[in-house]
Amino acid sequence: MVDLDVVVVGAGFSGVYAVHAFRSAGLTVRAFEAGDGIGGTWFWNCYPGARCDVESKDYSYSFSAELEQQWSWSERYPAQPEILRYLNHVADRFELWPCIQLNTRVTGASWDASTQSWTVATSDGGSVTARYFVSAAGCLSEFQVPDLPGLDSFAGPWYHTSRWPKEGVDFAGKRVGLVGTGSTGIQLAPEIAAVAEQLYVFQRTASFAVPNRNRPWEEAEEVAFKSRYREYRDEARRSFLGVPITGTGRPVLSEPREDVQRLFTERWQAGGGMPFLGAYTDLLVSQEANDVVAEFMRDRIRETVLDQDVAELLCPRGYPVGAKRLCQSDEYYAMFNQPNVSLVDIRSAPIESVYPGGVKTAADSYELDALVFATGFDALTGALFAMDIRGASGLPLRSAWATGAQAYLGVAAAGFPNMFIITGPGSPAVFSNVVLSIEQHVEWVRDCIVWLRSQGYTTIEPAADAQSAWMSHVSEVAGATLFPRADSWYVGANIPGKPRVFTSYVGGCGPYRAKCDQVAAAGYEGFVLGGAAES
Ligand SMILES: Cc1cc2nc3c(=O)[nH]c(=O)nc-3n(C[C@H](O)[C@H](O)[C@H](O)COP(=O)(O)OP(=O)(O)OC[C@H]3O[C@@H](n4cnc5c(N)ncnc54)[C@H](O)[C@@H]3O)c2cc1C
Image 1 (cartoon, rainbow, N blue to C red):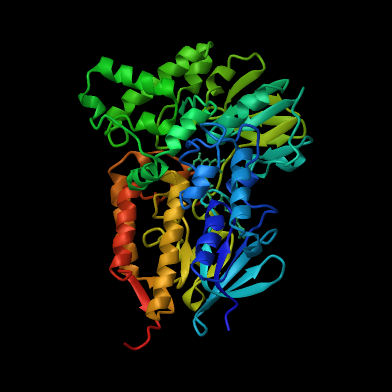
Image 2 (cartoon, rainbow, N blue to C red; image 1 turned 90 degrees about the vertical axis):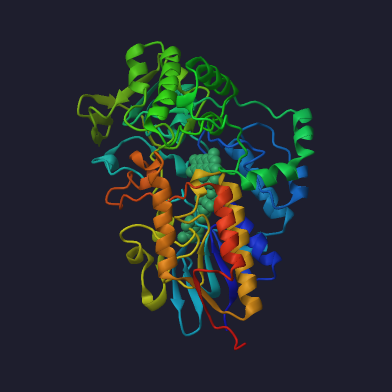
C-alpha cells in the first residue's frame, strides 16, 4: 500500500503550484519544504534590494484568471517581500497548507521496482512512499560559499545572500566587503553603500547591467492591462522567453548606425533586459553583432562613472552580453561615484585569504567588520544532488549524470521511473520567465500522470535514445548561439570540478511547449510505459 500518489520536494513557485495542480486532479500529494516558510527563492533571498527582474504582470501565476484580476502588484518590478506575500496569499486562497510540510528536508529517495513506488526519506527521520516523485527543489537553491582559506577565523559576521537573516543586518558605520558582482551583488551593493562607512566591492568579473526604470504600477495602467490579461498570457506562452517582446525582426548588422543608437537608447531609457537584448535578431548569435550592443553598454558605464579608471574596470570584457545572466539596476554604476565605495579588482590580484580583521588579496589587505558573499548557486543540479536519489537498480542520480545532466525534455531522466523534475536540465527554465515555465512543466506532469492512470499504466521513464537525442538537440541549438561562450553558472563554471556542459534549452519557450505537447499527444512518445492492463 503506497502512502501518497505524489511527493513534491520544495515549496517555491514550483512546489506551491504542483500541490494545487495535482490535488485538483484528484491526486494525494505532500510537499516537503526545508525552510520554515514557503516561497523558495523569495523566502531565502531576503537581502536588501532583492527584486525580480521580470515584470510583475509576467512573473506571476497565470493558472487562475480570478487570481490575476484580484491580486494587485504595487510596482513594475516586484521586490522580494511582495513576491513572498503573493505566494503566501496563493497558499491561503487555494487552501494548500494541509499538503505542505515545512521544516522538513528530503534527504533521499529510492525507487522500489517491486512496489513500483518511491520511498522518500526526510530530515525528521520519517519516510513516506509515493507512486511519483516530483522535484520542485529549484534551479537556483543550493547556494555556494567560496572556499577561502581562513574564513573560519574572520572575527566579524559573514553572510550569504541566500541565507540572509530574517531580522535584517545593520551595516551602519561598518566596513563591509562584498564578494560577487552578479545579479544579486549588483542589487545589494547600493543598499549597503547607503549606510556603510565603507563598502569594498571585490570584483572578479564585471557584469553587464541594464537599468530597471522601476516605478509604481499605476491603477489606470493596471486596469487597462488587466482587461486583456488572458490574451496577453496566451501570447506569452507562445513567445520565446515567456514574455512577449517586440523586436525589429532584423539583424543589427544590417541597420544604419544612427538607427541602432536611437533604438538602443530608447530601450535603455525604457529599462528592462529582455526588450533590450530582444531588439535585434542577431545579438545573441553573432559575436560581431553582440560587440555592437556591448560597446553601447560600456559607453553608458563610462558616462555614468566619474573616475575613468574605475569605469574601465567596470566595463565587462571577454564574454558576450547575455551569455552570463544580464543584470538590472538603476543605481549600481552610479554608486561608484560615492566616496565610501571602492572597487577591488580580484581578477588581477585574487583573494588569498581571510584573516580575523579582513581580507588579503595578492596586492593588498582590507580591514573589514563584515563580509557578504553574493556568490550564487550550484545551478540546475545542486539541489538534486544534495538528495540521495536512487533510481532503477539503486543507480544514484549523481552517477547517472557524472558527465553532465541528462533529462528527456528537461523533465524526466532515464533510469529514474516515475520521477519528474520541474524546470530540470534540458528545459528552457533559466532562460525564460521562470514562472510560466514552471506552470507549463507542472501541467504537463499532471496531465501525464492523469493519462497514465486512465490507460492503466503504472510506470513511465524516458527511453535512453530519446533522452540522448533530446540532449543532442539542446546542445546543437545552444551551439548556434553565444550562450555557451562565457564562464557562467549556465555551464557550471562557478563550481570547481563540475562538468562544463550547457544544458539549457534556448530554442524558445513557445517551440518547447509545442514539442512537449506533441510528445504527449503521441501517447508520450520517447517514454517507456509499464504496467498497462491487457487491451
Ligand atoms: C536571487 C534570485 C533572483 C531571481 N530573479 C529571477 C527573476 O527576476 N526572474 C525569473 O524568472 N527568475 C528569477 N530567479 C529564478 C527563481 O529561482 C525562479 O524564478 C523561481 O522562483 C524558482 O521557483 P522554484 O519553486 O522552482 O524553486 P525555488 O524558489 O528555488 O524553491 C525551491 C524550494 O525547494 C526547497 N528545497 C530544495 N531542496 C530541498 C530538499 N531536499 N528538501 C526539502 N526542500 C528542498 C528549497 O528550500 C526551496 O524553498 C531568481 C533566483 C534568485 C536566486
